[in-house]
Image 1 (tube, rainbow over the protein chains, first blue to last red):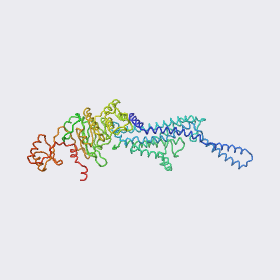
Image 2 (image 1 turned 90 degrees about the horizontal axis):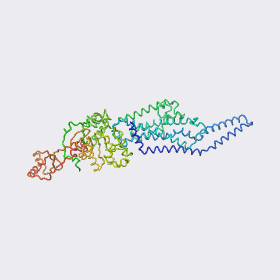
Image 3 (image 1 turned 120 degrees about the vertical axis):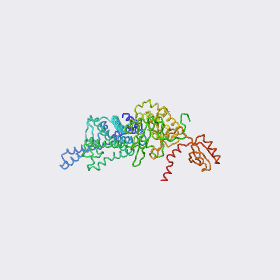
Image 4 (image 1 turned 30 degrees about the vertical axis):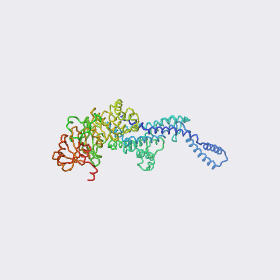
Length: 309
Length: 328
């Protein structure tokens, strides 16, 4: 089995497309991090300072004894509104730090998802389109072993891209951004201790990777059932992008709970649940059922198929 | 033509499963092999044994079921009924054990074009037990590809791809080599080289070779034995025998008188073009010419005639499918 995985990995790594994807990924990571540094420099914060000056002025006015009760209440309300605006904007305008970039590394997993889908869709389908499937299946190796080696290779590929993403995000965060001032950074509207950044970011990457595996398993199934790379890529990306909309449409119905797009695992950490009723346990259960279903369909069709191509 | 190459047969005797195979264990046995797709029986109850050191040709018109049969023999398709035994092991029950003795080139050898020839061989070598790096190098030398083995397959000519295809089929020292349309797209020199190579591994290593082709002349030059399939049924297994009867072509007028004389002389007469074909010994011919001359027959030609495989093939399979379709 190890030899078979070695084979699949060798084939994947011999394709130009694989390297182009890896290079694009690195360029995107370094580029985005650099850009966010650049945009920080141009961010106009003078209006915030103006607001702060206004507040100071209001406090002075409030201090004078000439005000009627009505005027005083009015002014108090105005001041409070301003203060709230300042508070929220300060939160968002907190200067970028190494830690905030690292903890948000999972954002680039969108690309990892895309690339893993492409590799997954083609790993079985391309053998058929190249005609090499005939060479592959007339060997003293059972078909389920060949399919397993391909699936494991896809999981490894997804993992490799994820590690690449994480490492390069950390490197570019260290290049472009200073360490956070103080002991906490703001993450998803709340405070996060700087010391917890590594655990948090790694956990987020792990959850994103699970999402990558799910959609790749789907692409793997479509690719091995229909033997068409483009169909598998198309369908997977279509569902990947419209999945949350579909869930939104069906939100009112019980069935929404059982759609696999409703169970993006990162939702529990971001604090924005797709469905009120969602829990981590439910999501894991639903995703597991789907994963098993996809694999069973893949294996059955691959093992039973008469190769006529 | 070199001496090692088999001379084309001068005709072949019709005999099912010839006697000299008795006692030799077949490498491959097809047993009641059938394949039904939908309601159509593509392959109908095929029985065939293939022996070591022998090259068996597999002939049949398009759509007769050659490719389906071969696909079933290498595990790409599942037989609806029957089984294939390779060195006594069932393809159905012991896939890995039986197929490990088989080397396959199915149609054009489709390789991973984006990898070098060497990586392709390495890839297939890993799928067999006990193929060492040394063995890979040995096979590369055997097919004469040392110089370009590390270049990408996409840069290879068709001939080189064929040789690489042969190399991957030989890696694990198969006892049975199966080739589907192996010489498709090869130039005459390539075909000849290929043919001689097949003969040498059949003779020297006792490999049983099974070759399917449309190219009758090709099969004729290469094979010891020919299996003919039509409409999914094996209609004939013949040896390209060494002791053929000689045939003569006689062109003479008037035709009816000639035929009468020939029949009277005890020859079996067959119409061919503007004349007749008879089976006769060389010694009989002068007497026959004298006889015809004295009877006042106008004699235009008496030639030794070699029935080509094509003639016999068309004879056996009933010739044109187009004509057949019209009569339906």
